Every structure is written in structure tokens, then in C-alpha cells.
Length: 232
Image (cartoon, rainbow, N blue to C red):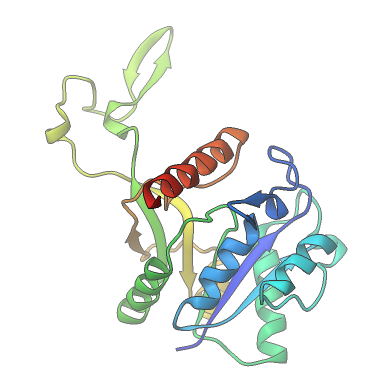
């Protein structure tokens, strides 16, 4: 099985400026995902699609394939990640070889483990359908509310705080760490999500951390500091 790992990384991140090349634990953020992808059995190549020369330089130095800077129409705030991925996939299959799967590794999930990636690849090979990384929901939907005319109403019919935790069915959220789909289905569905997608459950909160805000970055640094202290 041949799988192409794609990392889409724009240079214009706003909430955490220059986050893709910002140092985290001694490495630029994007390098964490590149190294995990390259080390994972079943991944044929890691291709980085970027509009930024510094990101391209850092990515190439880490071993990723960076054949070009993104075309101008794919480097805007309104450009969709789907179009970015399809552009990279089309190029790779035209210039290298066809692939069985397209693996999207968002650079904002630096702590995903190689073993998790390989577990997702095996699930994809076994199930033959899209695989998406999920984690247990921190706030269960049956304990969530909406406000109607100044009154709290359970968001899910039948929900509410009268329910005990042991009465709640497991609930999961997409964590952003892993998306894997066949090229055929990606092109036909025009999405990494499909009705028949299989869950890759990631229980560890640190592994499923998605760095989107300055607070998320602080959590990542705290996790690294704690890990380093435990190793000493």
C-alpha cells in the first residue's frame, strides 16, 4: 500500500504568528509532523504544500518533499484546504506514482505518535474506507445547553444535568490529528469526511492536542516540560 502524507502550511497564521516555524521543544512546529510521517511504515512520501519560503526551507531540511510554492490562487485566506490537497495529490501522481491513500497530517498536532499513524494506516487497509482521528469529548453533548429566551435548554433532547456520567454513551470529537482517504473518494466526495468513515480513537489528551491559539501553545510547552521532568 502506498500512502502520500500531505502537510498544508501557510505562512500567514494569525492567532499564533509564524507558528509553523516557531520552535517547540527544540524543533520548528512543522518538523514534528514531518518526522512522524517519514518514520511511519506505509508512508511513501511526505509532501509539504506551502506559500512561504521559510516553511519550505525548514521542511526540505527535515526531509519533506517541497516541489514548489503554492500557486497564488491557493495562497489566499479564502483558499480551501481541499483544493490545496487536491493540487498536491494531482501533482504527485502525475510526477511520481499513483497512491492508495492520502494522509493529511496537520502541523498543529505535533504530538501524534508514529504508532498511532501506523495504527490508522492498518485500519484503513483493513476497513477499506476513510479513517479520521477522534478523541473523547471533554464536554459531553448531553450535558450541553442552548439559550432560548433567557432559559437554558438541553442541547440534545433528553439531555441535562440529571444524567449521571455513567449513564452517558461515549461521545467523540474530531481532533485534527489524522485524516486518511483514498484518492478516488477524496476527489468524488471533495472532503476528507465521508458517510462511512472509520474512527481512529486517540485517548491521550496530549497526543490529540491541536495548537490553534496562544493558550494551546502554552499547553504544548507545559506538556514538554512535564515530560522532560519525568525523564530526569
